[in-house]
Length: 230
Length: 230
DNA sequence: CGGACACTTCGACTAGCATCGAACTATGAA
DNA sequence: TTCATAGTTCGATGCTAGTCGAAGTGTCCG
Image (cartoon, rainbow over all chains, first blue to last red; front, side, top):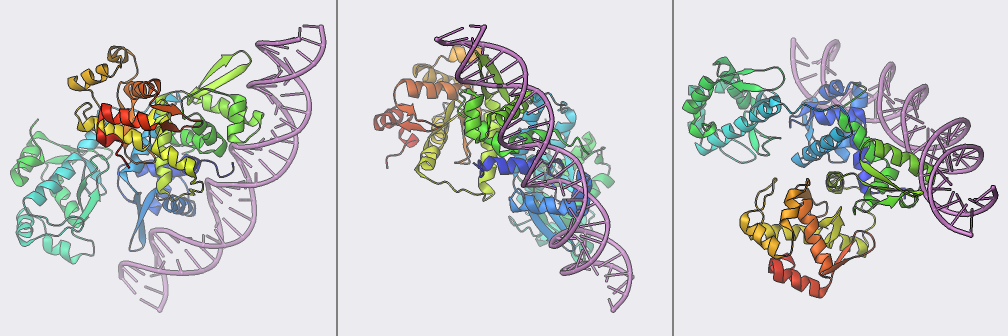
């Protein structure tokens, strides 16, 4: 019975505190570097690297190189679901209760994903831009000329973005919505504009709070569908 | 960061091969004695006792004394759901799937998941019920009036189910099919009917074996799609 | 280039824990 | 009461795996 049920190996993988810390740090769907995950887990870099290699080998994580960084994200929303289910179980063990306050709802509505907008609002943003023909493509996103004109008009330095090494557009799978939102340099620039215009502000944590006026302005600029009233 | 996220402790609990063996042995919802579980896990009695005490302390199991025996069962269908979800994750890890005997095939066709039907047949059941409009919803399932009438007609005491504390409908992610099947009180009641009607019987282990006549009756009651001929 | 940074690999150490045998408790049967 | 069975507790043992420092590899930047 040494082989045991398959379930044991994956559960043991999640069961180490350091790895569990890393996984929970990744639960919001962002990709983090090895260093960031090491800090999140409270271990040194070599230790984190070893853990991440194992999680990757088990296909719980997806790795992506970017220059000298290595970004890890949850392989799949399915992984996040299982982690959430485990949290549910953990609650009934009599351990400390996890607050499920309004902050959680806010997090799903709009949050920062690295440096761009995620959550319900972020997914709606990409969908709206695509529908208006300002961004094209499915997995590989591109900006057609009319879209480029729109973004320039919106106050974004497209010249600058295009010169930089970072990809202008990037899809990013949204953990709470299970659909893609807009990442990349353009995604970051858009969020910058929102914040600079005062349409939204960063709350402590990852929450992005849009004001009523900000939502109105958003609708004005991008169309009604981005933030349906009610 | 020593305490780590709550998730780690419960995952570590499941992550030990001996404990995982015990938990999977209990996945059919029956209660087993310490000795039986020790044998299922392939460890001695003292070892099993110690493991069970820990699982019990974490409220993953419920214990019940009966004379000089002590019976353990899963504390809750929710525990079974999480275990199934973990099996699903384990599948994609490409982990060792050594034993692929005929029994494994039967297990994928139809098995018991705590107290309701899982496997190919269970997934087909839920899909068929949804298509016929007898169950509605995606993650949160509900029973519309026409569905309720159907189940009452099928011999299920919907009044009783609705009064009880247990949710009537619950999705449960199927590890072999990677789609949801029907859990909750209604899922359990349906399986009860199938067994009572003699359409299927419980084989040793978790296998549910449908007879030829049983499959015909199933098609009659729920539609062709639930068990396509061939 | 050369230096800084991000990460990986290696080797050694250590702590935790799963395991078992033996002794102990409790229940049931004769 | 006495014996048998079921389970628990305890102490000792051995192995796994998590941890870190140091050294190695690759990438970016000036």
